[in-house]
Image (cartoon, rainbow, N blue to C red; front, top):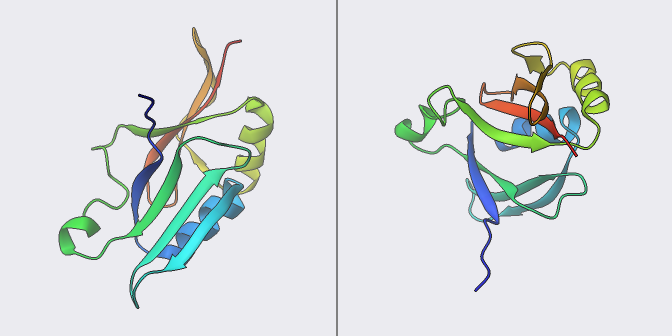
Length: 130
């Protein structure tokens, strides 16, 4: 049996502002945006060229869900964005106003830098060593 994780839910405040951030600032593709009810949409985004896991942007619709916006992992890095051109993506993201928590650093596994999405969830931008 073969299995994989297809989507990961990311709780957001607003569908459209989240779509704008991910497609404009991170250059992700909008895979799907389907209206399910008058208040709920099925919104999938994915890094360009990726055939793996996608993000399901889910608008918070309860007080408890709203407390998770921007802090889905208690302040730890939540997601890892792999790249094959670290410096190009880093510079492009800086030009788009993405907030970085540190300067890029070399680790035994590759180049990495921590950044935040529009809500404050922490991500690693990572290029692994070949």
